[in-house]
Image (cartoon, rainbow, N blue to C red; front, side):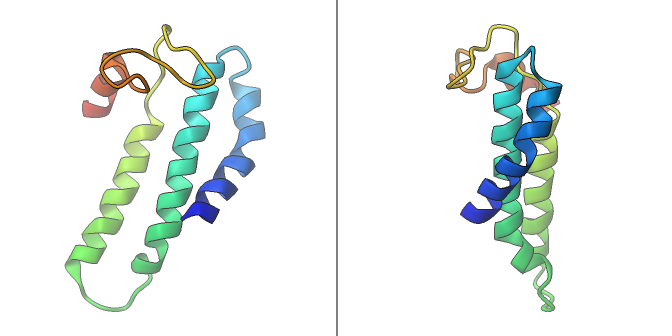
Length: 104
């Protein structure tokens, strides 16, 4: 999982930086979520290719990829500060507007 997260963030950083040169907070959030996606991929890939018929494993794989897809659509608020990412209450990393994007 750690290797997957590191590999994903290192591979994605140059392209993300070029697309978000004017919004470093969005760049930081995108690289963070790409790292999480890479870590989850590294963690659940083994279970996705198993040949047993355990429905809970299959649901876990679908759930992990659903989480990464939902987080990829979130846009940071204008109030967010970069390095480290701080967006305000309630979670400092995610503010109410970002949490609302995750719910919808």
